[in-house]
Length: 453
Image (cartoon, rainbow, N blue to C red):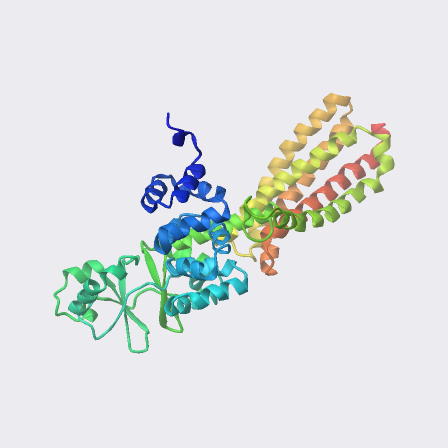
């Protein structure tokens, strides 16, 4: 077997880059599965990455980066000189340009924008002003618009004259606007191709088309795409056509938001983390959450200190405290996950507390009862003391019910207060369930102490 086949993909890529053979590099990259491409690029050193992107050129480099995660693209772009980065960003779709530039330091983003083509830089600056969870934040500015005075022949002639440029567009529709750039109709390509060339576009366009405002939230966009089989929907700002939001872009944005919330729940505040990032940067991002969690856990532990005499008298309780805390926390986090997902998908509004209480309360009561009976039975069989089983089982049942209710409600409350429900729900839930769980066990035990000793 040839030695080249024994090498890892990034090692093969390193060798090909050193040989400066553009065609071999291009064929090798095209032959790699998407996941392997991302892994191979992440394992290359900074110098090799720069050499690779320079070797294949800005257009192919942009195609390569489109298949990577946003975090990895940002990491690669910020290591490039501004002129080289600008040449590549110029070739990215407009929505991805805004995503990448929005994640860079302000100075780095400005340096790249200053070196981009004026048209692309203007579009990127426009998109950067919109929140990422709105139609403006996920729309593209590559679309075709024609005046209401145009004919079918005018549109077809424009297609043929600019075929090379439009080949990169995701064209499903063309849009008709008035002299003030206000959207007046949508032209489906099928209708365009079947119409007589002399006909005015107003005769074949769809009048009063569905559109969305530039500040429409992701939840509304998802609902529209669920209700209609559209590939894209035009976006307007004060009635003027400014872009097109695609179904795939909305689905991707919702997935990315769910991922961000999951990372936040996991204690990874800020942007997506990769292991290729500097160690100190990664450590500080994790410590920002862990250091807060120390304080919250001290609050929960203070309950044990208050009942230390009861715990010393019935040492068996120490075995069950972490079980009750952990089981209740797990139940609560399940409810947190459901609420965060439903908020992300627009299935529940931040003010629908009663609905969540009703839905989660029933689940919490059933699960709490079952778990309480199981753990109480274990305590009884272990020590032969019915009252120990009642203390442990009753505490777990009540704490599970409370944890599930809080887990469902905390994300809604934080969302209504314009706080990130993912980042704060976990620590709040953990502290409360620990503190209440310890209190229930130890207070029940203190009340029944003569029966337990």
